[in-house]
Image (cartoon, rainbow, N blue to C red; front, side, top):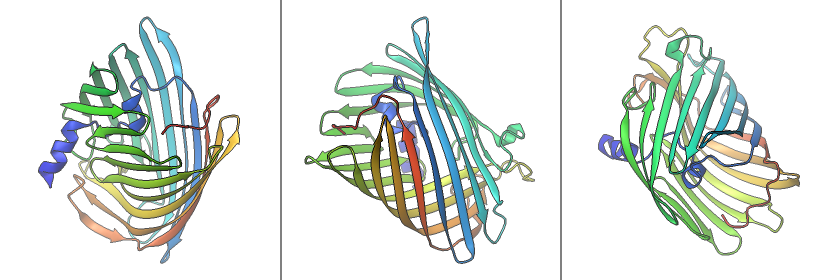
Length: 302
């Protein structure tokens, strides 16, 4: 299992969203998103609020720059040692010039974000597009100071991708296919334990209904942990039904309801070093999300 995970990691940057594979420059539009989720059961509950934004910064010489920000607050009531308030905050600057690109970022998942150097993760990704067109090969080097696997170790990788009107894929962790006029299928995997499989039905005008199965593993670096090599991990596997409704002027509202059938947290030096595992039990959840991409129209391709 470790060998398989290592091979996947060497082939793809762990933090790169799928849309950036097909648009390495990061996009020319601004984008904003805000959401809220609530769930609970068996004496435990959580409430999460989040926000993200991205915008072009303009050009400096031949380089096109883009800035991205994100923040989230997780409030929870649970038995055990999980902090009642956890945050995920971060920022990244990316740039592209022809076939070359880079991204520099800093994030802090903690009960006290950026409270000390050991609560922060600093990252860098440097890429070069070897071949362009429908088939694309990207070479790069990735660095992360506190990822849950191979922390502080730069490594090279190769990424192969393809895009057409009916299919997009990036080996080894992303596939999106058009199944007829209204159906769309998506599979995504981001090492080490983050995955998503979804099937979507679209109606004229940009509305959609989507069923999703997903798995998430979040890493946190508590501020006052005695052993700085220890991390806090929160894991969840769930199924959800989502409805998206375009509101006009670039706004889209999404509502969802689902069931998390696996909820637990643990401590460890790495993602597979499981200590003091505490189960929260299964629970239902619901949420709402609002997206804004000024000037955007409903996607008629993929």
